[in-house]
Length: 331
Image (cartoon, rainbow, N blue to C red; front, top):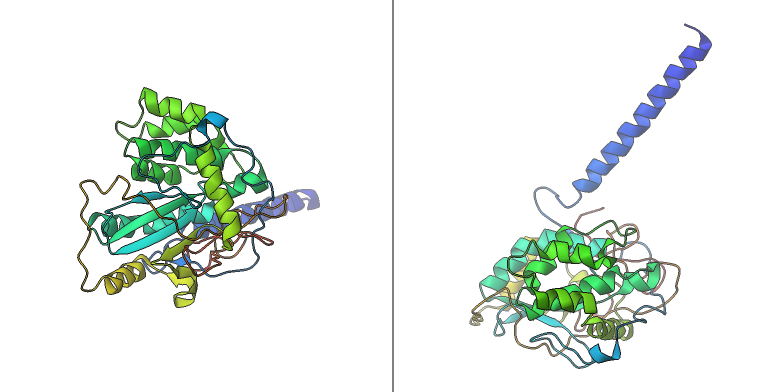
């Protein structure tokens, strides 16, 4: 065999080996949400803080939509969407961005447990939708997705559409949610959601200002990133070293609810009573990084959380890199 052929085969073997290593790395990332059969969310800070662009939250919609508020939504200085029975004894407050990978990990991993607690009247949620990644990375995906979800709230289908958006979240660098036609296409996965009123609401950006107001509140809150998750005002990033499983969350809710009657709601999928507003998280900052992002625990969006009062653990953070919630033990 000539030296040239030998070198060619060796190079080919090296390329094949490199490809296999990449595939194994991808497989590990795909399994990161599963640890010994349990989903784990890393809420504690893991390397770097996300920096918010000072322009985050700027932009917006027409003045006609400046005061528009979705059905049952809480207004005031910290707008939020309630989900679950109004009388549920425990409240899970979540600050999130639909473009945030760590938010997707948290929502996907904890969804069954949260739905179970909501449907049994044990837990209600307060969702604060923010547009951190738009402000730091550019684009309108966070804003347009938030507006579409708020439009779904008017139809009583916020929870279902919220879950569909996270199940179809594009890679963070691909601002696919900026495409309103794509958002309408995803809405087709929720029975009865696509109506002329919903389509008009999405296309008109009816609730852009509502989402911007929530983003402004987050910027002033002191929280560092998305997702920021609080249970009854307790920052979950400070519990168990910031590493929680769905079973841990259920136990915490059960312990908090001892001796209390569950709430009752005709439909757990619709919003609960208007939200009074939990303390928001994180703030704006530099323009070049994805501050509002939230990422897996080690990397960009680490499951950070900043202020312990009133808001959930965070992942998109104000200074440096984005810490976001992670659904894995060491992703």
